[in-house]
Amino acid sequence: MYSHDIATLTSWLDEARSAVFFGGAGVSTASGIPDFRSAAGLYASQGPGGRPPEYLLSHDCLVDEPAEFFAFHRANLVHPEAKPNPAHTGLAELEAQGRLAAVVTQNIDGLHQLAGSRVVYELHGSVERYHCLGRDRHQFTLAQIPDEPVVPNCPRCGAMVRPDVVLYGEALDAEVVDAAVAAVRRADLLLIGGTSLNVYPAAGLLHYYRGDRLALVNLSETPMDYQADLVIHAPIDEVLAEVCKRLFG
Ligand code: CNA
Image (tube, rainbow, N blue to C red; front, side, top):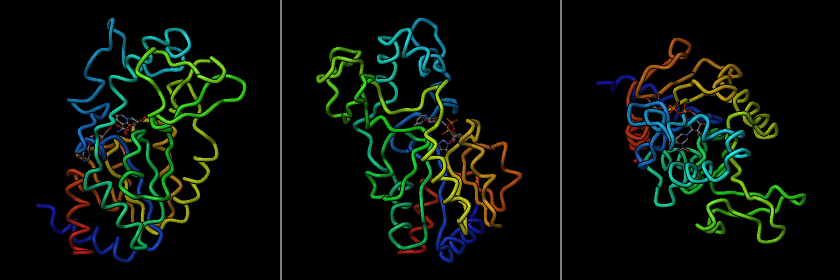
Protein backbone atom coordinates (compact mmCIF):
# COMPACT_ATOMS: atom_id res chain seq x y z
CA MET A 1 0.00 0.00 0.00
CA TYR A 2 2.80 2.39 0.93
CA SER A 3 5.58 0.53 -0.90
CA HIS A 4 6.64 3.61 -2.87
CA ASP A 5 7.11 5.55 0.38
CA ILE A 6 9.03 2.67 1.95
CA ALA A 7 11.31 2.62 -1.09
CA THR A 8 11.94 6.37 -0.70
CA LEU A 9 12.70 6.05 3.01
CA THR A 10 14.99 3.08 2.33
CA SER A 11 17.02 4.99 -0.24
CA TRP A 12 17.22 8.07 2.00
CA LEU A 13 18.52 5.93 4.89
CA ASP A 14 20.92 4.16 2.55
CA GLU A 15 22.41 7.52 1.57
CA ALA A 16 22.36 8.97 5.09
CA ARG A 17 25.54 9.34 7.14
CA SER A 18 24.27 11.46 10.04
CA ALA A 19 20.56 10.72 10.27
CA VAL A 20 18.74 11.40 13.53
CA PHE A 21 15.70 9.55 14.76
CA PHE A 22 13.31 11.49 17.00
CA GLY A 23 10.63 9.35 18.61
CA GLY A 24 8.08 8.89 21.31
CA ALA A 25 5.77 6.44 23.03
CA GLY A 26 4.55 4.91 19.74
CA VAL A 27 8.00 3.35 19.30
CA SER A 28 7.34 1.12 22.30
CA THR A 29 3.66 0.18 21.90
CA ALA A 30 4.70 -2.96 19.98
CA SER A 31 6.70 -3.88 23.10
CA GLY A 32 3.48 -3.80 25.12
CA ILE A 33 3.96 -0.38 26.71
CA PRO A 34 0.85 1.81 26.22
CA ASP A 35 1.37 5.32 24.88
CA PHE A 36 -0.43 8.36 26.34
CA ARG A 37 -2.74 9.66 23.61
CA SER A 38 -3.97 6.66 21.60
CA ALA A 39 -7.42 5.22 22.32
CA ALA A 40 -5.78 2.50 24.44
CA GLY A 41 -3.32 4.97 25.95
CA LEU A 42 -2.86 6.03 29.55
CA TYR A 43 -4.77 9.29 29.10
CA ALA A 44 -7.96 7.44 28.19
CA SER A 45 -8.23 6.32 31.79
CA GLN A 46 -8.57 8.28 35.00
CA GLY A 47 -6.06 7.66 37.74
CA PRO A 48 -6.98 6.55 41.25
CA GLY A 49 -9.54 8.85 42.92
CA GLY A 50 -10.53 10.28 39.54
CA ARG A 51 -7.28 12.22 39.29
CA PRO A 52 -6.01 12.94 35.77
CA PRO A 53 -2.75 11.19 34.77
CA GLU A 54 -1.22 14.61 34.07
CA TYR A 55 -1.44 15.37 37.81
CA LEU A 56 -0.18 11.93 38.88
CA LEU A 57 2.86 12.47 36.63
CA SER A 58 3.60 15.95 37.97
CA HIS A 59 6.16 17.51 40.28
CA ASP A 60 3.29 18.77 42.45
CA CYS A 61 2.03 15.23 42.98
CA LEU A 62 5.52 13.95 43.84
CA VAL A 63 5.88 16.65 46.50
CA ASP A 64 2.32 16.76 47.88
CA GLU A 65 1.20 13.13 47.56
CA PRO A 66 4.29 10.94 47.09
CA ALA A 67 2.43 7.70 47.90
CA GLU A 68 -0.07 8.37 45.08
CA PHE A 69 2.75 9.43 42.76
CA PHE A 70 4.78 6.27 43.30
CA ALA A 71 1.75 3.95 43.15
CA PHE A 72 0.84 5.39 39.73
CA HIS A 73 4.44 5.50 38.52
CA ARG A 74 5.17 1.89 39.47
CA ALA A 75 1.88 0.60 38.04
CA ASN A 76 1.96 2.45 34.73
CA LEU A 77 5.45 3.56 33.78
CA VAL A 78 7.74 0.76 34.92
CA HIS A 79 7.71 -2.24 32.54
CA PRO A 80 10.64 -4.50 33.44
CA GLU A 81 9.23 -7.30 31.26
CA ALA A 82 9.21 -5.20 28.05
CA LYS A 83 11.62 -6.19 25.27
CA PRO A 84 12.85 -4.13 22.30
CA ASN A 85 10.75 -4.48 19.14
CA PRO A 86 11.86 -4.14 15.48
CA ALA A 87 11.75 -0.33 15.72
CA HIS A 88 14.39 -0.36 18.48
CA THR A 89 16.54 -3.08 16.90
CA GLY A 90 16.27 -1.50 13.45
CA LEU A 91 17.51 1.84 14.77
CA ALA A 92 20.40 0.12 16.57
CA GLU A 93 21.31 -1.60 13.31
CA LEU A 94 21.16 1.67 11.36
CA GLU A 95 23.56 3.21 13.90
CA ALA A 96 25.90 0.21 13.75
CA GLN A 97 25.93 0.44 9.93
CA GLY A 98 26.94 4.11 10.02
CA ARG A 99 23.67 5.62 8.76
CA LEU A 100 22.22 6.94 12.02
CA ALA A 101 24.09 9.36 14.28
CA ALA A 102 21.68 9.55 17.21
CA VAL A 103 18.33 8.60 18.68
CA VAL A 104 16.50 11.41 20.44
CA THR A 105 13.63 10.02 22.47
CA GLN A 106 10.82 11.25 24.66
CA ASN A 107 10.55 7.71 26.02
CA ILE A 108 11.64 6.79 29.50
CA ASP A 109 11.71 3.00 29.12
CA GLY A 110 15.38 2.39 28.27
CA LEU A 111 14.51 0.08 25.35
CA HIS A 112 16.75 1.82 22.80
CA GLN A 113 19.83 1.10 24.92
CA LEU A 114 18.63 -2.46 25.52
CA ALA A 115 18.42 -2.92 21.74
CA GLY A 116 22.03 -1.77 21.36
CA SER A 117 21.73 1.91 20.43
CA ARG A 118 24.72 3.80 21.79
CA VAL A 119 23.99 7.50 21.19
CA VAL A 120 20.60 8.04 22.85
CA TYR A 121 19.41 11.41 24.14
CA GLU A 122 16.58 10.87 26.62
CA LEU A 123 14.74 14.17 26.72
CA HIS A 124 12.41 13.04 29.51
CA GLY A 125 14.85 10.94 31.49
CA SER A 126 14.53 7.26 32.33
CA VAL A 127 12.68 5.00 34.75
CA GLU A 128 15.90 2.97 34.89
CA ARG A 129 17.65 5.59 37.03
CA TYR A 130 16.84 7.11 40.42
CA HIS A 131 18.40 9.62 42.77
CA CYS A 132 17.74 10.75 46.31
CA LEU A 133 16.68 14.26 47.22
CA GLY A 134 19.36 14.53 49.90
CA ARG A 135 22.30 16.91 49.59
CA ASP A 136 24.54 14.29 47.93
CA ARG A 137 21.96 13.07 45.39
CA HIS A 138 22.91 9.40 45.81
CA GLN A 139 22.17 7.49 42.62
CA PHE A 140 20.46 4.14 42.13
CA THR A 141 19.27 1.85 39.37
CA LEU A 142 15.70 0.58 39.09
CA ALA A 143 16.88 -2.86 40.23
CA GLN A 144 18.09 -1.31 43.50
CA ILE A 145 14.68 0.17 44.34
CA PRO A 146 12.70 -2.21 46.58
CA ASP A 147 8.95 -2.75 46.09
CA GLU A 148 8.36 -1.69 49.70
CA PRO A 149 7.97 0.92 51.01
CA VAL A 150 5.99 2.40 48.11
CA VAL A 151 7.79 5.73 48.61
CA PRO A 152 11.45 4.68 48.52
CA ASN A 153 14.00 6.11 50.93
CA CYS A 154 17.71 6.47 50.44
CA PRO A 155 19.55 3.69 52.31
CA ARG A 156 22.49 6.08 52.80
CA CYS A 157 20.89 9.34 53.95
CA GLY A 158 17.17 8.58 54.45
CA ALA A 159 15.91 11.21 51.98
CA MET A 160 13.17 10.34 49.51
CA VAL A 161 14.35 8.67 46.31
CA ARG A 162 12.76 9.69 43.01
CA PRO A 163 12.99 8.53 39.40
CA ASP A 164 15.22 10.47 36.97
CA VAL A 165 12.15 11.31 34.91
CA VAL A 166 11.15 14.82 33.84
CA LEU A 167 7.73 15.39 35.42
CA TYR A 168 5.07 17.87 34.40
CA GLY A 169 6.14 21.17 35.91
CA GLU A 170 9.87 20.38 35.60
CA ALA A 171 12.46 21.59 33.10
CA LEU A 172 14.30 19.38 30.64
CA ASP A 173 18.00 18.76 31.25
CA ALA A 174 19.75 21.55 29.33
CA GLU A 175 22.80 19.42 28.43
CA VAL A 176 20.63 16.69 26.93
CA VAL A 177 18.58 19.23 24.98
CA ASP A 178 21.72 20.97 23.66
CA ALA A 179 23.20 17.66 22.49
CA ALA A 180 19.93 16.68 20.80
CA VAL A 181 19.64 20.07 19.08
CA ALA A 182 23.24 19.81 17.84
CA ALA A 183 22.60 16.34 16.39
CA VAL A 184 19.41 17.51 14.65
CA ARG A 185 21.24 20.57 13.22
CA ARG A 186 23.92 18.27 11.75
CA ALA A 187 21.47 15.66 10.47
CA ASP A 188 21.28 14.82 6.76
CA LEU A 189 17.94 13.08 7.40
CA LEU A 190 15.48 13.54 10.26
CA LEU A 191 13.21 10.56 10.85
CA ILE A 192 10.38 11.20 13.29
CA GLY A 193 8.28 8.28 14.52
CA GLY A 194 5.72 7.20 17.07
CA THR A 195 5.02 10.60 18.57
CA SER A 196 1.91 12.77 18.56
CA LEU A 197 4.23 15.83 18.57
CA ASN A 198 2.01 17.37 21.23
CA VAL A 199 4.50 17.64 24.09
CA TYR A 200 6.66 20.77 24.16
CA PRO A 201 9.47 21.72 24.29
CA ALA A 202 10.43 18.27 22.88
CA ALA A 203 8.19 18.58 19.82
CA GLY A 204 9.92 21.87 18.89
CA LEU A 205 13.13 19.96 18.17
CA LEU A 206 12.24 19.40 14.52
CA HIS A 207 12.46 23.16 13.90
CA TYR A 208 16.27 22.86 14.21
CA TYR A 209 16.48 20.54 11.22
CA ARG A 210 17.97 22.29 8.17
CA GLY A 211 17.80 19.56 5.52
CA ASP A 212 15.17 18.55 3.00
CA ARG A 213 14.64 14.94 4.08
CA LEU A 214 12.21 15.08 6.97
CA ALA A 215 10.34 11.77 7.17
CA LEU A 216 7.47 11.22 9.59
CA VAL A 217 6.14 7.74 10.43
CA ASN A 218 3.18 7.68 12.79
CA LEU A 219 -0.06 5.73 13.11
CA SER A 220 -2.19 8.85 13.36
CA GLU A 221 -1.89 12.31 11.83
CA THR A 222 0.26 14.86 13.65
CA PRO A 223 0.20 18.67 13.67
CA MET A 224 3.56 18.57 11.80
CA ASP A 225 2.58 16.30 8.89
CA TYR A 226 2.43 19.31 6.58
CA GLN A 227 6.11 20.13 7.31
CA ALA A 228 7.40 16.67 6.39
CA ASP A 229 8.88 15.72 3.01
CA LEU A 230 7.60 12.17 3.45
CA VAL A 231 4.68 11.03 5.63
CA ILE A 232 3.86 7.37 6.29
CA HIS A 233 0.85 6.54 8.45
CA ALA A 234 1.81 3.03 9.58
CA PRO A 235 3.39 1.27 12.57
CA ILE A 236 6.99 2.41 12.99
CA ASP A 237 8.07 -1.11 14.01
CA GLU A 238 6.74 -2.56 10.74
CA VAL A 239 8.21 0.24 8.64
CA LEU A 240 11.68 -0.04 10.18
CA ALA A 241 11.60 -3.84 9.96
CA GLU A 242 10.89 -3.59 6.23
CA VAL A 243 13.46 -0.84 5.63
CA CYS A 244 16.20 -2.77 7.45
CA LYS A 245 15.31 -5.98 5.60
CA ARG A 246 15.76 -4.13 2.30
CA LEU A 247 19.01 -2.48 3.45
CA PHE A 248 20.75 -5.24 5.34
CA GLY A 249 18.95 -8.42 4.26
P1 CNA B 1 1.76 10.20 22.71
O1 CNA B 1 1.30 11.60 22.82
O2 CNA B 1 1.04 9.16 23.50
O3 CNA B 1 1.71 9.83 21.15
C1 CNA B 1 2.03 8.55 20.69
C2 CNA B 1 1.84 8.57 19.18
O4 CNA B 1 2.35 7.36 18.68
C3 CNA B 1 0.39 8.66 18.74
O5 CNA B 1 0.27 9.70 17.77
C4 CNA B 1 0.08 7.30 18.11
O6 CNA B 1 -0.77 7.39 16.99
C5 CNA B 1 1.45 6.85 17.71
N1 CNA B 1 1.66 5.40 17.71
C6 CNA B 1 1.25 4.47 18.61
N2 CNA B 1 1.75 3.25 18.28
C7 CNA B 1 2.46 3.43 17.15
C8 CNA B 1 3.22 2.56 16.31
N3 CNA B 1 3.35 1.25 16.56
N4 CNA B 1 3.83 3.10 15.23
C9 CNA B 1 3.72 4.42 14.93
N5 CNA B 1 3.02 5.29 15.68
C10 CNA B 1 2.40 4.79 16.78
O7 CNA B 1 3.30 10.06 23.08
P2 CNA B 1 4.50 11.08 22.78
O8 CNA B 1 5.73 10.30 22.88
O9 CNA B 1 4.25 11.88 21.57
O10 CNA B 1 4.39 12.07 24.02
C11 CNA B 1 5.46 12.27 24.82
C12 CNA B 1 5.29 11.71 26.23
C13 CNA B 1 4.80 10.29 26.29
C14 CNA B 1 6.63 11.66 26.87
O11 CNA B 1 6.65 12.48 27.99
C15 CNA B 1 6.90 10.22 27.29
O12 CNA B 1 7.62 10.14 28.48
C16 CNA B 1 5.55 9.65 27.45
N6 CNA B 1 5.42 8.18 27.41
C17 CNA B 1 6.52 7.36 27.27
C18 CNA B 1 6.35 5.99 27.22
C19 CNA B 1 7.56 5.10 27.08
O13 CNA B 1 8.64 5.46 27.57
N7 CNA B 1 7.45 3.98 26.37
C20 CNA B 1 5.07 5.42 27.32
C21 CNA B 1 3.96 6.29 27.48
C22 CNA B 1 4.17 7.66 27.51
